[in-house]
Image (tube, rainbow, N blue to C red; front, side, top):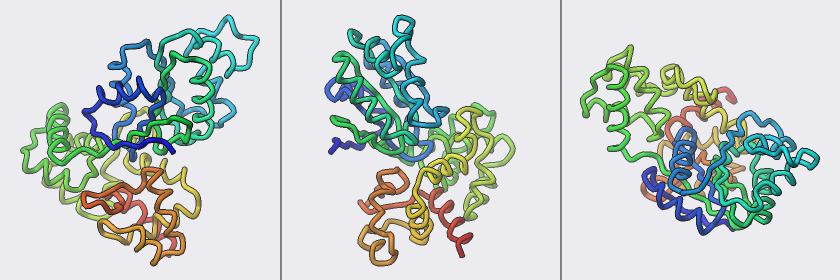
Length: 306
C-alpha cells in the first residue's frame, strides 16, 4: 500500500525531501488544483538534473516508453526497445524524471517507474496524476485546495494583472463559489476583465452557470481551457458505474459519509474509487465532499439521466 500524505501548495521543499527517500512521489489532486506547477517547483528544489514529459498527448500505454524516451539523448541505444534504452541511459545518472499527467496511463506509468527505478539507483521519479500509480514504494501526496484566504489573495493578484481592481471583501464573495483550485481562480480573474466582481459573484451563485463563465483559459493544456473541460477530463476517466454514482452524489449539498452513500445508492461502495480518482475530497469535518464544480457537473448529468 503506498504511503499517502496530504500537503499544501507551499510544501515544495518537504516534497523534495520525500523524493530523496521514497524515490517515487506522485502528486495527486482534483482538476486544476496545481499539480503540474507544484511538481515543477519540487523539481527545482530537488537539486538534481531534471527531465520532464507531459503525457497528455500519449494516447495508449504501449507508446509510453517511447514518449518518455523522447526527453533524453538515446542515440547510442537506437537498437534497443524504448524501455530498455531508457534504463541504459539512466543507469549511472543522478536525476529526477518528471512524468506529468499520468491519470490515463496509471498502470503503465507505475510499471515503467518500477522498471526504471530498479535499473537506475540514482534516479528519482516525480509524477502528477489525478489518481495514484499503484507502484511499489510509491509515496502519494494529495494536494489540498487553496485555503479561502489564499484563494482570495490569488484572485486579487490575478485580477490586478488583468487591470481589474477587486476589493478583498468582493474577492471573498467570488471565491465562495470557487473550489480553491488555482485554475478556477485564474478563469474567474480573466472574466473580471469584462464583468464586475459583484456581477460575477451573482452569476456564479446560479447552479451550473460556472460552465458558461469560467472559460477562456490557457490554450495548453486543452483540458484547462475551461472549467467544464477540466472536470470533464476526470469524468471521461471514470467507469460507467463511477459516473452514475458521481451524478447521484451531487444530491448531497455538503459533506456526507460513505455509509450514507452505500445505504442510498446501489454503487455507493465505490465512493472510495471516486476519492482515489480525486473526484471526491475530504471536507473540513472529515466527511466526503464533491467540490462545488464537480457537484454541479454531476447534477447536470443527473438531470440528463432523468
